[in-house]
Length: 122
Image (cartoon, rainbow, N blue to C red; front, top):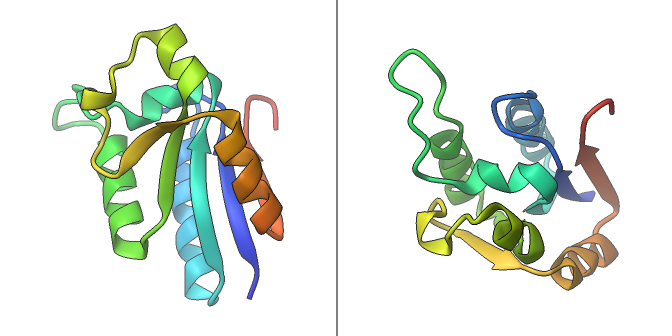
């Protein structure tokens, strides 16, 4: 079994990092591997905002992300520094998400066999 951590550094609707994370994550779990956690950094912290108004015509990424972590018991964290930079309030986070410093990310990375980064140009 391989243990993964995902690091998402891109905005949820500008890039398809969250979509790719969800699809890849399902495939990883189906193969019998583990995802320790998903860490959002930079503008990626907007992905944990539960109050996104996408209407009925667009995919609701916060809901998809919430369902994914609940169905597979995966940790979900947003960088505390970037949460403060953006003004995002923790009471607006999707259920299960928390605000953590880079120390939390480094602990996940140390416990993982692979770290997959979703970022612009990557």
